[in-house]
Amino acid sequence: MFNTLWITSRWAILSLFLGIVAIDTFIPDFYWNNELFHVLIEGGGSVIGFGLAAIVLAMIKKQQLSVNYIWLIACFISMGTLDMFHSQIHPGQVFVWLHSVATFIGGLFAMLIWLPESLSKKFFKLYYLWLILLISIVFSIFSILIPDLILTMLDANKQFTSSAGALNIIGGFGFLIAWFYFVKEYH
Image (cartoon, rainbow, N blue to C red; front, side, top):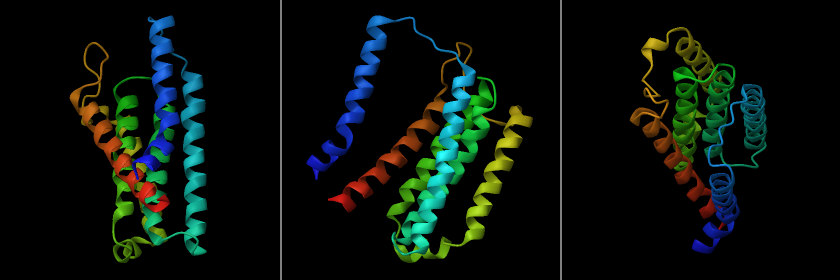
């Protein structure tokens, strides 16, 4: 099992490590502020997420995937929607808020893939998926229109607050838990 974990993660870990070392070594003062590129990357990722949701839904309906994969659809829809709104606004509190909440909610939905199939079947209704989409849209709009109601994401030095860190770390752990499910299935 550890061999499978290493095989599935080594290239991501290695490229991340080498990228950090290269930037820190060769351009230590590097700061890239290109909002148009950010819109392209985050918006493209959102569209890919919606496409993946549609593919996974079709595969579940054709019984090519277990109904437990409904949670990945919920993950892709919620993250895709929140990150689409995130990609459309200027950097700041709401910008970080929407991305952090996307990571948090996406991670929580992803780790639910471990639930028993009997429980997942209860949630396999299209109107739940539409409801997740609607809630994500309304949540994003309210976050943008009424920013005073959101948690503080950046301190005076433009660094992540503990709230922003906690949302991202918890979401990351959710994805890690989901990853173990896929390693188990592969193994």
